[in-house]
Length: 97
Image (cartoon, rainbow, N blue to C red; front, side, top):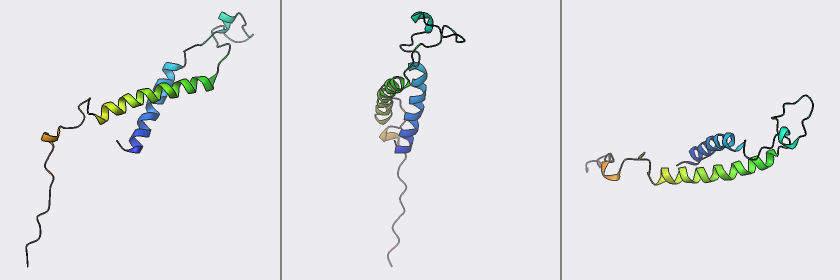
């Protein structure tokens, strides 16, 4: 896997994991009985974006490591086995003289 492909894959995994991590630990204003006028009761009462990004980065790194290992070890069958690989084309040496 090239560096560019690895970075692109990590970027996609990071954003997908973000949407899964966002609802973790959310405490609504209804639950704290401190509803700010003009906001819905389901709005978060305290939201720490730095903590969400940190958790997201850790989870995305673990997921990326599993995906990278699976791709490099051909667990998904994306690379042909060595015996099925096409022969390497070589140029014949020039004739003597």
